[in-house]
Every structure is written in C-alpha cells, then in structure tokens.
Length: 241
Ligand SMILES: C[S@@+](CC[C@H](N)C(=O)[O-])C[C@H]1O[C@@H](n2cnc3c(N)ncnc32)[C@H](O)[C@@H]1O
Image 1 (cartoon, rainbow, N blue to C red):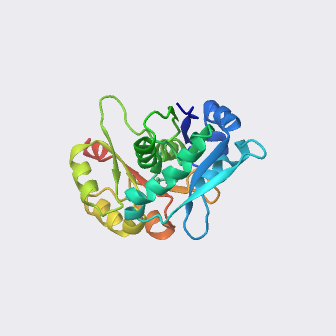
Image 2 (cartoon, rainbow, N blue to C red):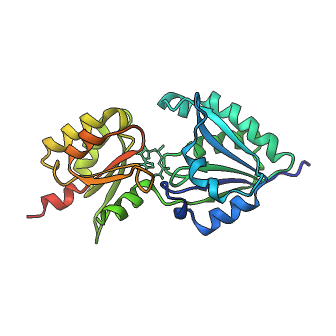
Image 3 (cartoon, rainbow, N blue to C red):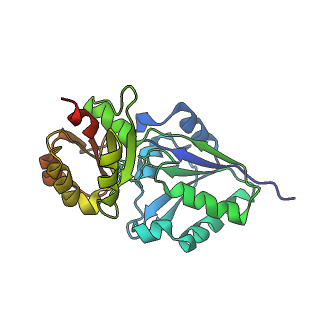
C-alpha cells in the first residue's frame, strides 16, 4: 500500500508574522511542500506573504488559483483540481501544508480542499494547526472584549447581504461580522438603524501594513478598502441601561 505524507492545515493568523503559533512555525520548517490559495490573475496570496518569513529556505511553494468569488471558493470542481495536485505530493510521500488566513476551521478554503483531498485519498493523515482568528485580533487591537460572563457571540458572514446579521442582532450579545466587503454600506445602514452606529468597531487589514481599527460606522464608510475588513458590535451591551 502506498505510503502517504501528512496533510497539514496551517492557520497563519490575521497578518502579523509574529502571530503564528510556535507549532505552525515548526511544521512549516518541516514540511516538504507548501500550498496556498492565490489570486487567479495576480497569483498573490495574503496567507503566503504572512508565512513567508517562517518558510524553510528552498521549500517548494505552490499557489492554487482561486477567483475569490463566493461561487469559486465553494466550487467542488475547483477543489477537486487543487486536491489532485495536493494528493500527488502526498503520494510521493511528501508532507504538505496548506496555509490559511486566521484559523483553518473558520470560513476557510482549507475545509473544502480537505473534503476533496479525502474523497481522492481517504487514508490521508491530517493535522490542523489552529490560528488566531481575524476577529480575535481585532478585539485585541481595539481593547474591547468579544464576550464576558454568560454572553453569546455570533460569528456571521455578510458576503451575501445583511440577512444573517439581522438574525444575529436579535439572537446574540456580541457579533463578529466577517466578509462585509461588497455589502459594507448595507451593514453600516443596518447598524445605524439599530442605534449601534457609534459603538461599532471597524477593523481593516488588522495587524497588517495599513491597518485601521476604529470606532463608528463612519470609519467603515470612509475607509472600507476591499476584502480584509470586519465589524465587531455588541448589541447586548447597548440594551444595558
Ligand atoms: C475567508 S474569511 C477568513 C477568516 C479567517 N479564516 C479567520 O479565522 O479569521 C475572510 C474574511 O476574514 C476577515 N479578515 C481576515 N483577515 C483580516 C484582517 N487582517 N483584518 C480584518 N479582517 C480580516 C475579513 O472579514 C475577510 O473578508
């Protein structure tokens, strides 16, 4: 039976290369090949840029192209193609790492790719190295708690609009709203309509060059700048007299 290398999902954290775990750095020094999702046209990979200082000199790096549209990131066909590339390495047998922003199990391409790898090669040994999420980093930078006591936290995506945000505002004491990029104005309108406009934390490129972490939806309206942004909001706090 063919021996298989281990497939590692590595969380590289929110941006600062010092925010990888000791374990992530050790694994990156040991693997035979590193994979990362890259932009379809530019080939640019934010996760790779973050991890670059920790890669073993001469370690082969492969960027797997994604279009970064919601459909492409979830497309089974795209993942099957990329999984074939990964499985070829694992069958050598080589140990392979796939880099993801933040944490690999939180809104990450890794979970889709892992499913496709397991379909092709169910026996593959898998290890996941957790990472510091973008919203944990934003709370730390803003010096605001995400949750206290018995409060609840909802992590929601605004990639497809504000419906999930509206539901979470009713249900949770604190929200981390990720992927607002295309719908930033709508998220701002909703939060303002609920009287939360001044209490929101808006974080853009948190812990990365050009970072902005500031209070108020007006900051989001003025400074929203592409994919790397999120909101933290605590409606539970606002209900407290
Ligand atoms: C596909 S999700 C990846 C989430 C990631 N796995 C995590 O654990 O945070 C991409 C979204 O994460 C958020 N994000 C990731 N890094 C960020 C950063 N440095 N600053 C602000 N938001 C960030 C943005 O909302 C972005 O649209």
